[in-house]
Length: 254
Image 1 (tube, rainbow, N blue to C red):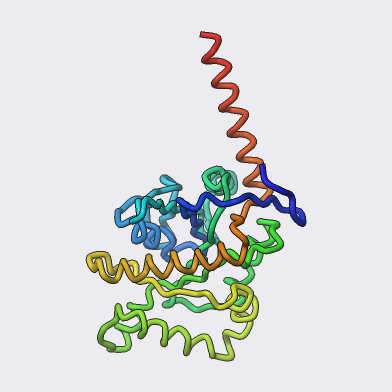
Image 2: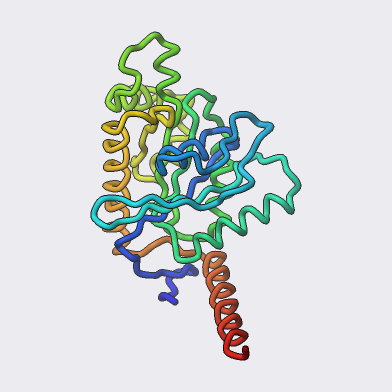
């Protein structure tokens, strides 16, 4: 177990692995983003409000240099299922994150209105995490920017520079002032654009994963190598260690 700092638990990171947790509104494209990063259809995507992720919660992908990318999905904000079912999925997600999280990808659909409700939902999640430096680990990710460019009749809709310019311009809108202050500025402006539909372009995938890893490395430097580990994750780790010890004892009796 790591050192206790300001009501949170700090633990040094295993630098061979990158663990990210996907959070955001239901239908924003969390599961599609997870599938894009894993380069396979692993998570059940919620293409409409009638479908949600309720199966796989954690996936892995090997990276060059003997590294590993670990993706943890979560129920979306506004999930309408029975509260007990949502809590179960959340518990599963935090169990998968018991060794800490390098980054929380806050997934935002560029085709939907960004309002106070979205900010409120994310702030509730942040408060639930009870980590004084939580926003240091947050990377806002705008999905479906390519669809927005296509609707405008633009070419090269998968151009990262073009997507970035579009989102940067929209973030200057006075109507997004609260979102900027509450999310973007607290996350220290480290946002990204990712087009989950661009699955056949290896160059685009390499550009995105390189940028994501570079951003996570920046977080690691800022956090002095500490992952984000909260009390709820620590509790999941304790339960796991107790279950392992019990299984070993039971195995020894046979």
